[in-house]
Image (cartoon, rainbow over all chains, first blue to last red; front, side, top):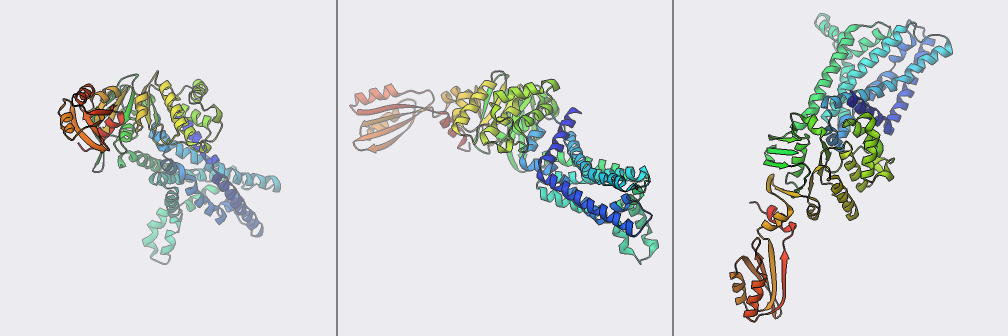
Length: 255
Length: 309
């Protein structure tokens, strides 16, 4: 446990040592601010049955940065160690491979959580200034936060795999971006079949409904904690970390 | 401390290390010698558990480096080739991190790091970023990292490469000090270093061990153990006469004005200088110079590794 803690601490610190981290924080903060601003504007102009939390997370100013931030978070975790050769001093210390993998994962996850703190501050300030809550119950706050955490874990585990597979950061970033985008836009797949025989594509729509982030987001943003996505994201995260662990171990056999 | 049995490593069809076996006893400083690409680093990487062997086994302090890798690694301080370090960390911060990873007890970390900093003379730079340090300092940070958990065994892969002569000297002194309580396996291709530091030399070439002995014995048993150079006023018949002496392998002749230079290559332990002098005196060849040249470790090294025996 202690080894894992120190490995993770080093990962988290290494994020904050790089200027890119601060650029990421600022850009994410700004774009989420824009998303939040438009959410408030929209609700003022066109009153709707949805909360500010819901509308903010459905803004493209949130979704796009959310997608693009994933590769940036994870691209260097393994690739950098391989490129710098520090993998050799790391793996010849009495450290187990799974500890390294988990530390990389948790390190990125901690930074990911830090990224979202300002966004939740917006909701807090909104209530403070207007007297109207950003959502009308605790559910949407915690629900959305839980989903973002779960989805974040999943995308980070995918990014870790991409980083473990590549020696160059840029390749790792490209690979994890492709995987993230593919997964996110799976939701759009049934749209291609509009007008086709609906009976035939029903299973697809049904299936996508289970795994699409954009199907989960509204549910959780309304404060409904659905256990199916929880199991889905947790098990996929575990699967990707498992594969990452094996890819990481495979370095020994590749030569 | 180290026991290597029939260790081999193949990269595809290329055999980097070919069925080598050796032992290193506690307290020895063993120099691992060989030309570039001889398999030194590969052997060290297998010993540290970084690379798995294709066949054979190795153990450190009784722990198999592959089966009981973690336990073996606890006894080991390793300085990899080119000293990879996290450039974005400060020296003391990095050493603290490494001490924690290597299982130094929580209350002892500051002490251990302080000692390593002291030993490697890093006090001046302990608060600097590693990325801002010169090569010599980085090398010392790498060494401090290798010994921060006070391991029984140090494996150092070319610790003096890329350093200036002063730095080489200080690193060499440091390693000698460290070796008082520890076993050290050090790879290098700088020969004087080995003669000064090591109690034993293992010469490896093309993945095979060519010799394993003290530097002294290597020199003594070396096939071209020495040379004798004689400059004398002598005719061509002298070549044959010198060549007839016992222990002379061959004679090279070079004309230098009235004088002729004869270079006699001698067998191991042969010393024919007195005999050659008497011969010259008998034949009335005026001798201008008679020099006995001892073989150096370099000669041994070249002899052992230049050919494809």
